Length: 281
Image (cartoon, rainbow, N blue to C red):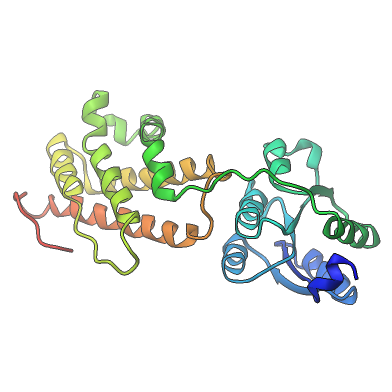
């Protein structure tokens, strides 16, 4: 009995935002005896990977954003390290970051796909699995802590390109303000157990008071907060090979919630005097 026969019915995850490609792959693989789950975006793919067992992944490289396929492949590699991972691309030779993708994927396939060849490749990979050197996963909190300075520098570069924010002239120290403390509060929040009630960010409240004195408008505060989220997610994008994907969806929701909560605390400084003690949020 072959290894694949010993495993019984094999489960395949197909991730592609092109309906015609997704339906074609699902129908062909089901005819070949596979159990197929198809998804059309990264969010659903990550959710399925985190909660279900798969033997094979077929993922489009762009769904529709560049790097989407790498995110899905990395999640599968970390969560199900023995799964066969195949990336589908229209122009694999021209894709940015292809070397990084090949470190995670078993094969990069060029569209259009010849179904018979795909079937043979899947069975070959299942019968003769390749050994992969896995990068130990890190939590989002650890990555942000390690790359705290890089996050601040990236945030500063984006702010300096914003004509509205730079109409108020500030040096680097005054511009970054309480940003290190705000990020430290975010990292602390990410490390709290699930369902733990987080305290408010004192750094965010003090940052709001500072910005009010510096002449920032409410709209400028909102824009600055948006740039902070962009900077945080850029750091995570640059560290996809290290991210612990088993918790990434929860961490992303926590980041969005905490940044919004911090913006609220900062905005309170515009409507009430700053005090030295705060109650729990």
